[in-house]
Length: 123
Image (cartoon, helix red, strand yellow):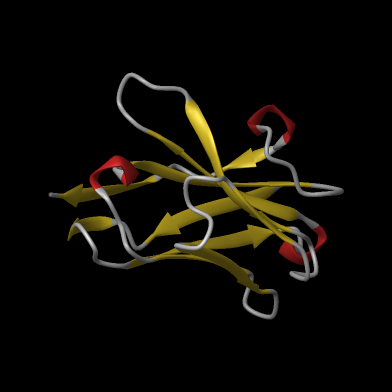
């Protein structure tokens, strides 16, 4: 079992930045690939970014590539999502999730999920 807790969400103006954290406890988090997903009201949960177990491989959705950066600190069991140049369309609840094996952009492949953190970007 792995428990995930997201933090770092909040209200920011367009063009601003936020850094989300996903803290893991339970089984060693370095054995899991981690993904970030987001869900806006009335919309499906969308892939944002993913990182491999060792942190060498990262993947991004087209909508955030070049603005967001995913990274991980396996010594402290934390995965980060640095979000720059935020826009109102980035407003959503952001979730981190983890899975064994390779990272994926498909939410149904992830085994454990956090409770989410709200990100609101004002125009």
